[in-house]
Amino acid sequence: MEIDMKFHAHIADTVGCAEEAQDVIRRARASIRIELQRLLGNIAGATERGCSGGVGLSDEDIASIISRLDEDLDEVLADAMSDLDERAGGEG
Image (cartoon, rainbow, N blue to C red; front, side, top):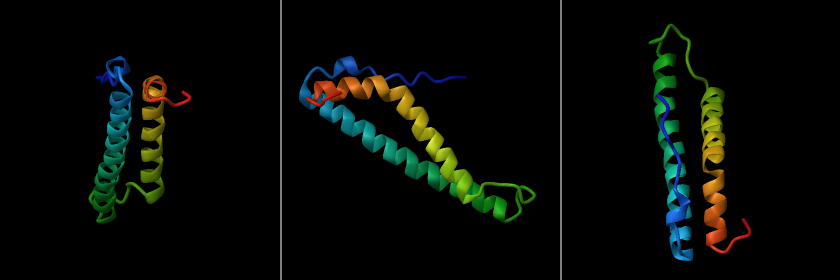
């Protein structure tokens, strides 16, 4: 099942709202990274203890997964973030 992750930037009609929306997105992304790293670390720890026959996640795997998530979020949010930047007085 695919989740619709569209952010409707058109509701941010003022500079203050646009800046607030950008801040919310930045904080949410940081929280996602921290929580994902913690949970993937739990998986890696479980696999190190032999719970999966020794096949599991390395630190490099975890970094790669988080990097791919960031890239996916960038792609999904690119238009919204650009629109919000313009509304906040940035250069787009």
